[in-house]
Image 1 (cartoon, rainbow, N blue to C red):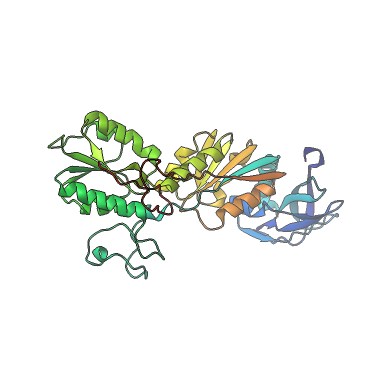
Image 2 (image 1 turned 120 degrees about the vertical axis):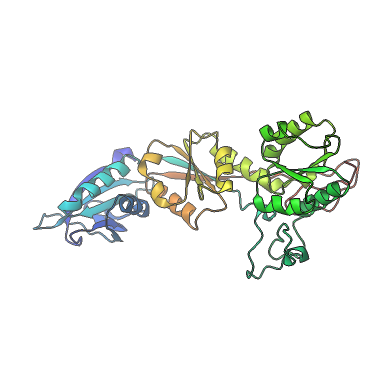
Length: 380
């Protein structure tokens, strides 16, 4: 690619004064028609910098003319000999933005690997209850104003993990225990707490667990919020057991495997990556969790707009990991991938982790849920 790279300028008569045109395609002498997959990202970058940008065809001309705009181009030949590149045209007042954009994006040209994390959406047992008027049929408790964990759309019964956790929280509270709710989702914690009003306490970290005080340390049980990855729950439970040796609680097969698989997939995809891009709202807990899982990457960024994926972020990146969170805007992943295809030869691979609950060799399992491990009946 580097040997075929050309940076050239041409005049053009299709650019109006005051605007910047980012080419959808252009025809260059000696190379013919050139496609511009990175054009949307370049246009978004220029709009962020204050340019009045238009996308469209951008024919260039060999001979200079009076009051014509200048088109700044970068192009290269891919492995199949096809010309790929980008072009930005502007009149003198906007020429600085245009020429600088082509120079910055040209520095990002290189061969790359794009590793996408195939993680899907979080388990529905972690989602907030749907608002009134959405047409989703909630369990009877919700219709009476009592908070409950949501029923997944299209299913007549709640998620198995949610049902297990609710039943256990109720059982522990009824027998007089203080119920420690391990979790972070306000909706899930509120629903679990409603099963034992006045007997529940929430802990979100091992530090909180180590400092917890309860009236009767010998009467304490725990319930893990549905949808919380087991890897996050275990350090909290270890701290609880250290402080309360008589701690009891529900079986670990009530933990959702999908939650752990999502974070594991993000970690695997980001291993060896120069930069991991988590697609989603920065303030969302799922985005933050996946960003933490991307710690193997040299750098991690949470982005929710294409203009946040500028040349400075990918310029030195040979391997880019793409991790979509639950709040990832529609088509953002496709837009990032398309932009990278216009910045040099791109190899795309997908990685995922999938766990399967195993039956106990001793006891017969309870019927499994779709996303959760098999539960084995037994004492606390």
